[in-house]
Image (cartoon, rainbow, N blue to C red; front, side):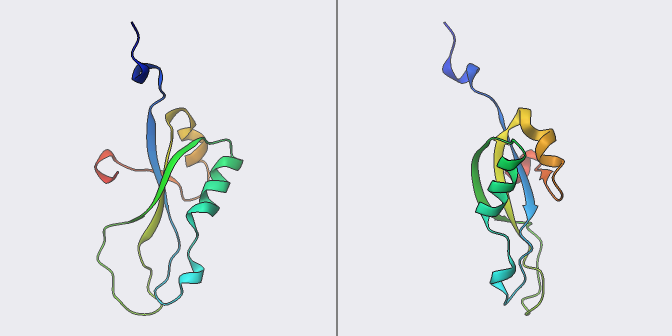
Length: 95
């Protein structure tokens, strides 16, 4: 008997900076915009969330926020996703 999980495709997380700048929230790239870009490249997105690069940042206007958009994608689409400027696979420890 085959388990349902065995037939499900494995997912991997990819991320890209959202370009956020302190005091200028309108400059950050939305999760939806990145989703559309990935889907246009034929990448199957399973989940998405906002995240942080984990670095300490100065809390002054004009400084990068360190925010990132992360997407759980089908592992078979990893090459497509990382061919899009800025997208990188997240290490397992950063999920």
